[in-house]
Image (cartoon, rainbow, N blue to C red; front, side):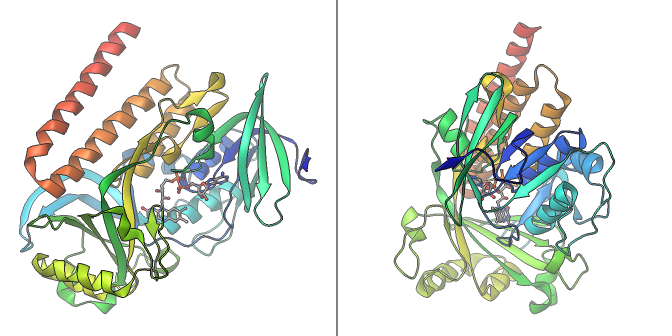
Length: 417
Ligand SMILES: Cc1cc2nc3c(=O)[nH]c(=O)nc-3n(C[C@H](O)[C@H](O)[C@H](O)COP(=O)(O)OP(=O)(O)OC[C@H]3O[C@@H](n4cnc5c(N)ncnc54)[C@H](O)[C@@H]3O)c2cc1C
């Protein structure tokens, strides 16, 4: 039976956010600092574990953190571009994008500290300016739908534990509920997740468990295409336990992209997963077979591959919502609910940060600017993935598309002006 509120909870919030992962928190912190009351509804529990991979914080992510992270201490290390290596480890060229590298959990808990002062042990809890709005982070709450009634959005949700249902009211609902977004399915039911045809084999190894030579091969961000359609490897270090950055306490992270059928997601119990075959569930023979294909890999990366104890697989999908805001701006999509790039090429948080900064600035063209950026980043990510997997010939196709999108924007801007 539906009840009106959750008892102690205020019924009305300036902002309600579906999904309390990176994008939900990104918006939550910024809107709270504008003095708005913000309630985040998250279907998972409060404490989260990472899936062992890095998050790249680019120019806009850094700009966001400079403005909104009141903890201020660094939780990343600097990467001066992505270097492409051949299979012997020789330098081929460098993509000049500069960014900071961190781990999913270090970023998540930094945002939590800023949003609701959650004490994770990863960082200090900042003191909030008196102008900050009231906030609540509600774990175990799954958003099931919404109705727009005049200026009010009524958000329906369910308690994951006891299945009780409740409703909150708001003037702004943000759907930051990830790739299978419930909010997006309601707004744009025809948008589907497209499987790219390739997967990422992933895993980490503590840096002190490998040889000095292997450690040296993780001092930056490296991309290493393999011959004979054996895919490509991306290698970098990420912070260790509780976000530790000291050399010796970090994890070496290896992501190996290969073309596969989705049947690879069948686990050791015979269950077929939708997007990720989780740690500890991969049948032993599957990883043994995969390691045989590592023969031509740059030796330090092969060493790390062989030392990964619990590899897991994520499929590489893409998906883009046709718009960012609906119902006169009362419902907005954020993060991967709005755009999922393939591969994410370290740009997921960066793209979400760009969208947030445009949204907060409130320029009348913010939505077209975000949509353009989404198209541009998706084209760039595809180009990067195709080049790394197949070599140069497909690069030109994506480059042409990219130029076309740029041209389209220039024409549209002229029309608007
Ligand atoms: C626990 C976790 C660990 C991750 N670890 C890594 C990592 O180590 N490296 C990496 O590159 N990426 C990782 N990712 C993915 C990464 O966070 C995202 O790819 C990216 O940062 C985009 O974030 P997002 O907030 O847009 O989407 P997501 O991170 O996918 O977040 C969506 C959130 O919405 C919640 N949600 C979904 N539906 C509902 C609903 N109906 N009601 C309420 N809540 C809902 C989900 O539980 C989730 O917390 C992880 C994601 C999660 C959830």
